[in-house]
Length: 379
Ligand SMILES: *[C@@H]1O[C@H](CO)[C@@H](O)[C@H](O)[C@H]1NC(C)=O
Ligand SMILES: *[C@@H]1O[C@H](CO)[C@@H](O)[C@H](O)[C@H]1NC(C)=O
Ligand SMILES: *[C@@H]1O[C@H](CO)[C@@H](O)[C@H](O)[C@H]1NC(C)=O
Image (cartoon, rainbow, N blue to C red; front, side, top):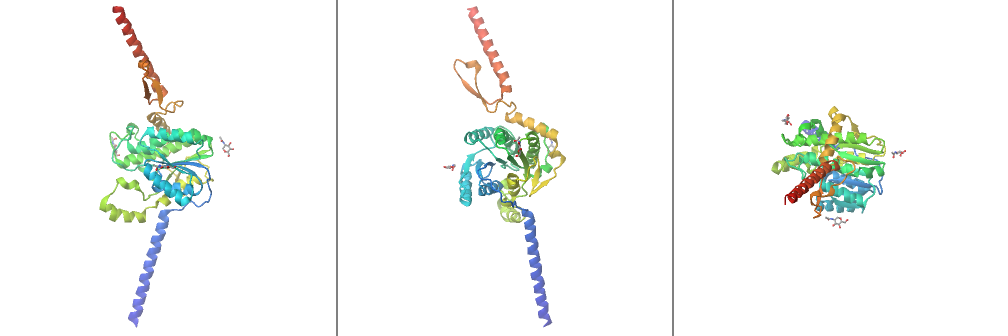
């Protein structure tokens, strides 16, 4: 009899322990996922661009904004994956105003083409979400020769935003959302070697690019004061997405990191919540903030160093060829040395860079015609 009670009480204790552990795990999971954006406001007819949104948090952001009536331009590198995601979003939301567009942030030319095409088909832009990113890639260069992570995460988006800025201004109140990362904590802007030519570390270059996102947010917010465009950035959290594809692979990924990460990492839907809040929350009037979950967070002083932010802005303008404000596009110019033959060359340079080149060409032409004259005189 006593033995039986003993067993029963052991059984009850075991069940209680199991239930408590399950509850604890459930609560921890809840905390990991973080709070969701709860307001029900709609954005019917508002024009939205989201970069890199065929998968992960970009796709979840697109889905949520589509549910709320947005007219969404999905700016993706891979047209096939983009189309798959587009059809899925249309099916789930019954919103037909979702478009596939090609944008390869790896190429400044692609950024310009995308922006041009967009500006030709739309006269307004209410929400721009710079979401695309690459993480901890092996050392690679973009088409324009920039270190890949700095080139895609920062420079490509820097150019894109600048090309769309006039339209965002016309559409004010409008918003810019920049997806950064808390990895910035470990980053520094290497002024002498932005491109990591001398010294490449996968994570170092990633952290630099994410710090650059924060500094870009700060400087842009300053430049946009009084325009009714808000620009804010966020840390999505540690999200289970394809971003980690360059870090682990194989069986270790399948049996160890995948199961662990499904518990300890946020879902893409949870990771999209900060972007969704920054894109939608009408009570958010401030600019230049850094958000995690639904809250504005303080940042380290290196992420609000306005001198560095200004330096990075100006350097970025040079690198993407935006230095001269009046010349937005690559300039088509006559090659002065060959006017008769009408050789037209495309010079991807700004006015300031072009002028000395033209002067040089004219001098060349003058020199050679001088020489021709002298030759004729000799004859
Ligand atoms: C992009 O969307 C259009 C419809 O808007 C569709 O006709 C086209 O096939 C799609 N592009 C790709 C690459 O699937
Ligand atoms: C190379 O990178 C490491 C870590 O990112 C840094 O400590 C070191 O100073 C760098 N060296 C040079 C020459 O930039
Ligand atoms: C910004 O918005 C406020 C309130 O909607 C408006 O009064 C103000 O004129 C706007 N400013 C600009 C520069 O558009």
